[in-house]
Image 1 (tube, rainbow, N blue to C red):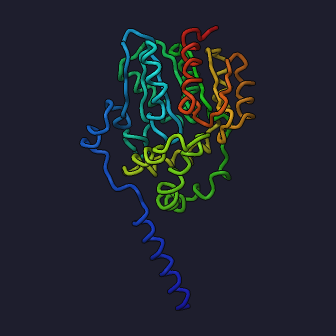
Image 2: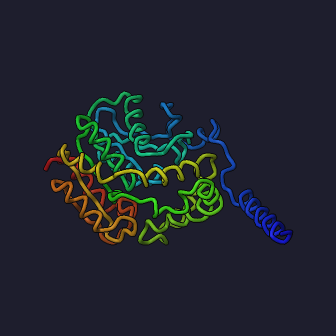
Image 3: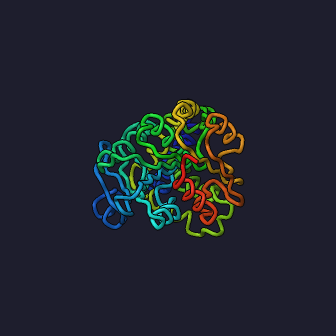
Length: 311
């Protein structure tokens, strides 16, 4: 019995030490951090949100919604190209990501859909918009469009999350306590940053990609937000979002990197079956974020579609 207690004590000590050594969240998102971040900040219902709005105010507005964990810098090539093409463009960090606040709430799709709605209302944007969603931003954008079709000129879905995620696929992160520990000592310091390279077909072309991602992991609340998102998304019926959207007949463009290892070609075929009126463009030699990896191929498609979304 004494031996067992000693072993348990050693294990407990090692686990506790690992937590304090490996955890990445050591900073607060304070005013000094926000001033150094660049962009703009606005107070919404659930907290302060980091955003960037550029282009002439009398031009058509394009709103960009990023995906699961990489914040709004993932839209860099798209943002710049659209502004140069004469559009007003809005991008922002979803709650829990980048330099936006990390409120202690459930990070389900309704939170993010509400964030889009709240952001547009607070910025006093009343005219119809072109809405783009990447990866998990796909169902966020699609759900917003389905609920507010009168606000949508067009919808673009880039490698969007399509099919439902099941609880079994997120084990053991769905276990209380276990998930929190693994997020702090495994996911944040190692798995999440390393997984960013998996979104690219040629990560060697983007040597700073992983380090750029790590910046947001320093701020308290990031892991809690990501873990909550994982747990909540496994309870969402994403397919129902696209079924509802189909009835609205909103002009829609779907893009997929042909080498995407996250969203399968079969998933996109399912989506296209729900939205048979949507335009579709596969992007060769690109992974999960083709707009970032192949902007020379993607930007002309986007600009052409935005100019003639109903064509």
